[in-house]
Image (cartoon, rainbow, N blue to C red; front, side, top):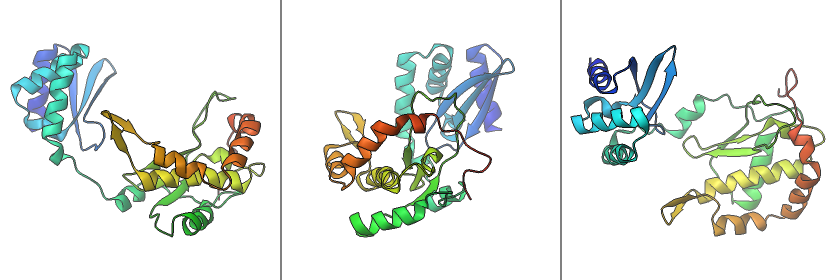
Length: 234
């Protein structure tokens, strides 16, 4: 009922075929795209009872990404952040297939060894080989690892699960992502900063830092041209 009411309020202001979908997304409060000639607007449930000025700002933003409308929406979201549901990390991890054991490298063993040696066993996160994203080969770039603070989960690109990739290099990538867990995110001058001076100092203090950087420079083509086989993990 509330969704239909919001849809009618928006449709009258946008003046085009429009469909509202209500989400509980914790990162994206508003997005829209065209599906089969219909504008699909995805909104966090906080917007269901939005007052008319906010609905008008939504309509202006959808019609033309109005910067004043964007600012009004940002203020509305900030005032209602308490409505953003925070899903516990262990629940988020349950939604991901955890595959730490590859054909050539076991990420769980690598993380456990690094945790004991460099972090006093205090890093409480999971690790998995990530999906094999589709890409035209050779790639122009490659993201070898990522860290999700919400799920407390490290993902490593499967291109590293090759016999030709040495364990010390995989370990360095894992160490880098573990540092994201340790240092988190800070803001400087209103900007989000993940590679702080402290982060970089810790990374450069890693025993195999120079060797790993050198190996990456000499073997980047191996990673950029990697293609997944039938089963790249077990």
